[in-house]
Image 1 (tube, chains in turn green, brown):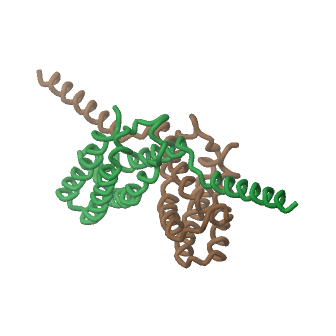
Image 2 (tube, rainbow over the protein chains, first blue to last red):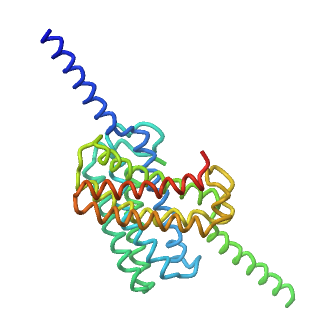
Image 3 (cartoon, helix red, strand yellow):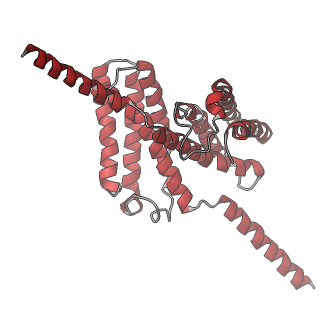
Length: 151
Length: 151
């Protein structure tokens, strides 16, 4: 009966291993929903800053500092949502992201660096510096969207 | 012709003022989309920590510290999405949120405090402390969902 027991044990091991993998597995649709949500949150935090920079809304230093600090942290979050297999589905992400992942990562790191600078500069309250850095940050958004996001 | 000019100027002022107000106005549906997105992002960051605490996934101290730090910042974000008028629409938010806003804010502040503690405790790498604090954090999620979220 030794063989049977080994077979049973082996089967149990496979089941245990599979369930562990399943528990840890991320579905592509969840990754897509996650990264789109990060972008929605970033857009919400970014928009009032744009309105202040353009003069459509009175400058509020506290709100600017708060939102820019949030953006600094948020900018680190999207990348982990671009998992393998999440190029298909309800997404405008271009296949170029996965084909040129190093370039895409570089773009994300540039965004992280520019939002960190924006968070720093916002503390000065100096609108000239803020405007310039807001422009630099916006450029990094646009560069990635132009290269990696479908219209 | 002086009156006509004044009328034209007044009209222009009204248009300018209106467009300024419109530019700054937040639509209830955008606020709903924003706060749901924050919750989606929080859930994404929270889930792997739950799997680690339960033993469904091997403990990875770096991932735990990273996600807990994100959650500390993310926990500050939902509240601003519960604007007046956003109780109707594609939302499970109960009217009690607006009727008992101080209680709701208190719940959010409790979540902020507990995620901040989780971020601190995660740095120790001590699973007993981490498990206990993960439990406390989860309770604050549940308390608000029970009181303020429709099934």
